[in-house]
Image (cartoon, one colour):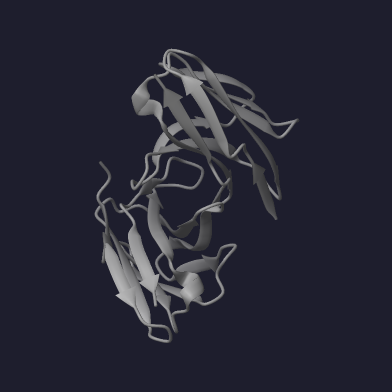
Length: 108
Length: 112
């Protein structure tokens, strides 16, 4: 089975840094995705980690430790438009399974 | 943007009626997925397809069936809709497994 856990909500101030953790216990693992979803919209791709380590893409970075079943998404220099849900997803062969998502609220 | 269209975008139906949701893609991607999204549960996989006429169940497949007779279309059918199937349904596509999936805009289904 798939068990993917992430915090339900986080709040941070504009300009700050927020780290969203994701832990997973899955029957198989090929890689880990992070998606962003604004309210009422479709999820959009942010990052993909296959190997251990940090992947950086502008203000967003994602880290993976396969031995620990752990990932985090780091959002730097937070902007109001970053208020959204962030979804952690694990891929195993053909399947893409999601956690429940973390709602991030950015305050001025 | 990936060419993926869901129809209808909104639907209200009565309990016990059959409902079919359509996902159409113009990207010729092999993999297609149907998810439902509910508060507190995130995206849950209903069914997926890894080729024409090749489908398999996800984690919440009870009460749903799918068909894929051609590459571009993936249909999700609720044989007899129930109120517990009120949800937002998302279709997703990807060219190969273990790569970025692109999502449609979603279908909001209400069963009354």
